[in-house]
Image (cartoon, rainbow, N blue to C red; front, top):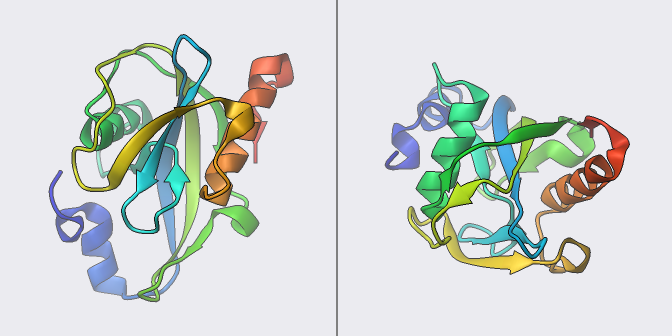
Length: 163
């Protein structure tokens, strides 16, 4: 997609400054054949996270998650299933070092249908790691850890997760 300033969110941020933005987004738990989940080491805060990001105007959620996975990790998403929705401001409120604030309203997906080997593509991630979901790194974005926990409940038959 290019630089942040060129994105919808970047253009909106330029217009409204640091005030709170409500941001529709997507994130995904990609699971490999060994049952491990894909994490990326974020370049902006050095924390492990799930692939995902903000939706762009005119884009459906499925298109957003496919674009995000391809742009960030070079992985082609073949199919994905929504398993939950994250919006709790206690967890989904972001305060950035530059003073920007946002609250995520995030549709969470899962998939075992993808091709390609994850690798840093667009500079958002420094590296990728396949990790057992019960052994997540201590240095992980808290609301992404919460998403993996919701995914585990969903897998156990807990139904659609609202977190």
